[in-house]
Image (cartoon, rainbow, N blue to C red; front, side, top):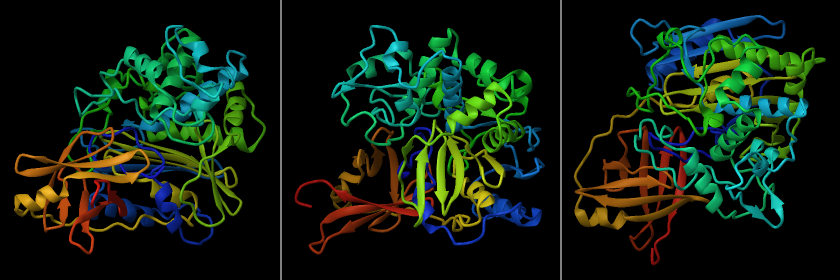
Length: 480
């Protein structure tokens, strides 16, 4: 799934690495980095490229030794940036949700092929297609046919967008939704699907999602700093989140779609989780939870993506498995309005990495590179200073319209007062500001737009520039 969401409020970020994988270099798999080398990378990411306020990296080697690297600030006065600093981990939560699924299957409480409708109220009419029902495994592998986000998702507070989305709204959307493709036919990342899965599993267990995660995973692994509801002591260790332009941002609450991204954690806690995953998947599982971890990692379906030659991407139960020349990398990332996260491990080398940042810009490349040096660090540029100019109203009017960025992703350019706004499907509108006749920039995020014209001088498309990538969009208006 290519990342085309550019506004400050957007769905939980995942799979943002796929579009950049094809640029990976050919080199030997990575070993533990020299502290000075990684320290420079982190310092440049914070100070030079201004992509984060603070970053914490934790590594685990084949002998079980861990190392910690930090740079920057927590953003919260008096809070040190270290392995116990609390961050939102966003969509990394999905791995915990699907591990619960695997564990409930092992216990005989559910089956992967159970229809999701079995665990919802009878009043909820789950959509079907060609006689096929949406099952638990369909939700865990993003193959249900449900969209990334429900169309009745309209946040009252853009800085905490999931907070007021209710269970009744989720049920209403599901009951009225018509599937546009066959169930199980195609991988399509869905926050809605993952949230629905967590909701259904909690209903089956007769408890709430947070309690289910704590009793089944966090307590057995002694992950004492991971939760949804923070204790006063955890709250004191919380790093403050920042958006793409490093402006302070609110924490997110996900009462209904908790299984998609509600967890908060620390590098030290995630290292405990990864150590357990490595042990479970590189030897004979010694505990019931380890057996569930091993079952969870079985590849289920292709996940596709823009991959390097000789590479494949599969999805297990939530975990993504990127395999290049026989070397698998198991990973998941996440992002909320003010944070970005990455965790992964190599079953071959028994190495693991977690990277947590208190800004929403991606740090996935750091995690990938530390696991396998064939994936280079992102090629970033020093932020450019953008200066707004004034354009004639007729020129602005010519840019108004819809532009197709990808299937299901349309950018709408509209007039607003004396200027223009840009809005991507399912997102809020944001002002864009001209710095030339064809070049515009956003102030809320580090993203720019370049409008294109055909040989007749008519506006024919645009290009979205963000995170080092250029995504073209053709103007959909007739006659253009």
